[in-house]
Length: 263
Ligand SMILES: Nc1ncnc2c1ncn2[C@@H]1O[C@H](COP(=O)(O)OP(=O)(O)O)[C@@H](O)[C@H]1O
Ligand SMILES: [Mg+2]
Image (cartoon, rainbow, N blue to C red):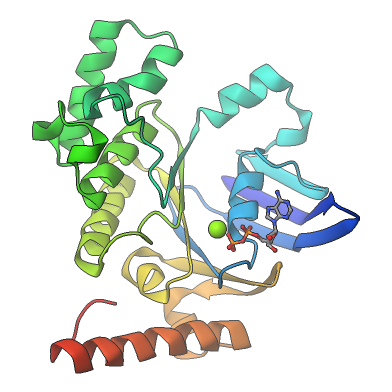
């Protein structure tokens, strides 16, 4: 049994007399402990897919099973509990601007009913785990993008999720910071055995951290395999485009800075 199983998933949005088919007949299995990449161009359907994995969006057709449990069979309360096992981080961090780093991490713990003192202790440890133990009193506006994402990661880990979904989590960060955040995610994967799903439009992100990758193009899953396989012999136009785009960026960076850089 895979930890995440997506079966024949289709998602359509209806409105203003129009129908958008954001996802079409997606089949995907993600194993426990994997770092799995889902890559595609903007508008391909990645965010919709990630929102279907935790049922923030209900599929129009098809199923999502987490540890063998069909999310369709859960009531609201059971679904909330299941969601607490799935952490999420985003491109724009979504920190509470009026709370400092420590209180941002405490927030989900207090909502879950943990006592303030205990929540603070746990949050402090988490901030240390993500490498910003010294920033607990800083407000989001006083933190860099990378530090903000570290707070968001600590907050996502607070409820001890089994799965961490990362939707373009490094897309607002520069290449060096991206590299540091991806190493942190890898460390977390190894330390806690959390399954990590990396949603991105950048092949470089996938190549740095993922073992396996699925490519989504225009709502459909067009290719899936190990990162090595897809780099060696991409089968779909979408895969070739994504690899090509990376090469172009690499060359531009080389021309600009005169040295190979992470892109
Ligand atoms: N709530 C919504 N209502 C209508 N259309 C939507 C909604 N969410 C996403 N879409 C459409 O679904 C498609 C996929 O969007 P999205 O999943 O955000 O793509 P990605 O994350 O890959 O950029 C796009 O055409 C988008 O406009
Ligand atoms: Mg998106």
